[in-house]
Length: 89
Image (cartoon, rainbow, N blue to C red; front, side, top):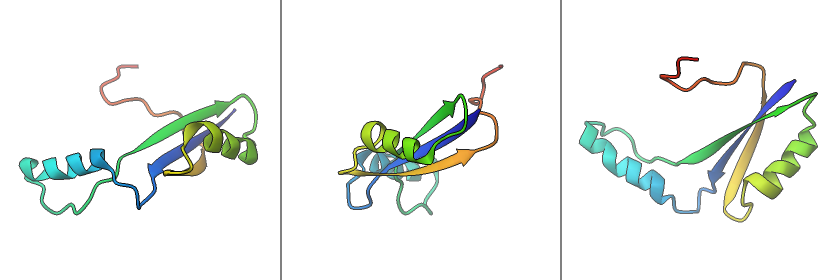
């Protein structure tokens, strides 16, 4: 079984209002050394067999990201899927 992570981010020239909202809120938490924040998505895909890099690229390009405004990075990972903080399982 193979697991692939696809990270999708807005292209640098595209405004990120969500990231700007986070950056603007940081000083209220006493954090003043952050110059910018960009928000993206992380998608984990598990395959029953080996992951075909070209098939993963096609999935990301046609379904997971909007290539006009977003870039993506694909990475095959070996560690088990992450368990959310506070999840007792």
